[in-house]
Image 1 (spheres, helix red, strand yellow):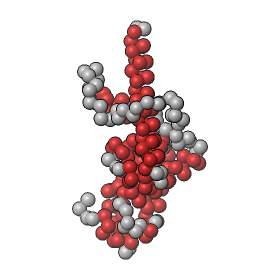
Image 2: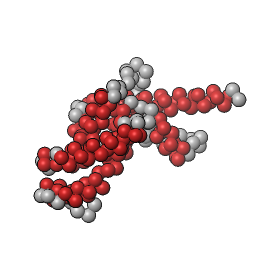
Image 3: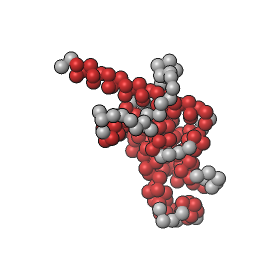
Image 4: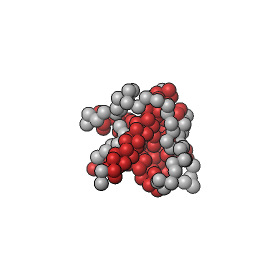
Length: 194
């Protein structure tokens, strides 16, 4: 973006409403990732996406320039998605306390996977398995690993304490690791029975 975001925000507040398009362009990828990780139904995603930007526009005067704008608009996106999930009675988390105990191996940084799979396959497998996670876990993995946000930024967006963010990321990684391990075991069983 060639124009500084704070300048754009001030322009929109001063009545140059067409400048809001710059905000949409600059933050649509972040918002899209939040919505897609939390809302499973593709037909509802577009409505939620538009609702988020409508709320951001309507509440732009409340932005105080005390935090990053990405954190502020990310929080609007998160809260809008949470409201949608609660309205549709979708569980935000899964009970992972017993099923995924152990050390939190960061599967995103493991590089020694042998010659069994290539990077493209790994990437597709991760996307597929991340999509199976509960909405809260999908979002945290996306914000931390894809958007390289710090625990403190994620904490501000989700209104979860940093320790809880760390704990949920640990659980999400363990769940993801277990899913991938189970998938490989099932494929090995399928091959051996042919």
